[in-house]
Length: 128
Image (tube, rainbow, N blue to C red; front, side):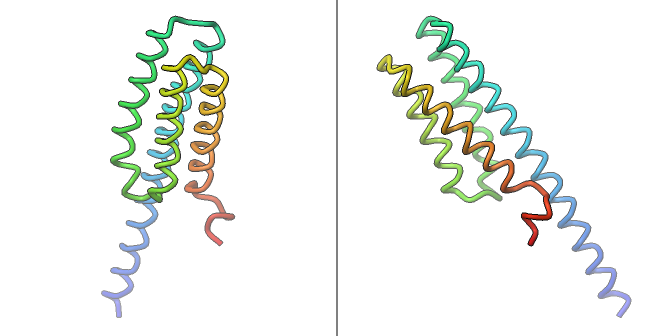
């Protein structure tokens, strides 16, 4: 009986630690991506050169791909694919000089990222 209690305790501790690690990584990822999105939004508002904006979008895509590989272990793929879809839409709209639609894609992407952070955070509403 003593062995079973110890094993259960170890499993519970491992689950709690993994949850903390994944929540922290999700927050860090969302903060990083949203920061890049905000920088791109400011560049669009200020009328920066399209080459500068395109380079920032390229950096955003690279950052997202790196984070996607880890986030996909514990977040639903369709949620992550929505973010990727909006990033591709953003790039496409910038390439075709559709800045209003690009701003919409930025807002959608930012909303989905915020939703991911809230959905996978450790809150009482998410537990029950």
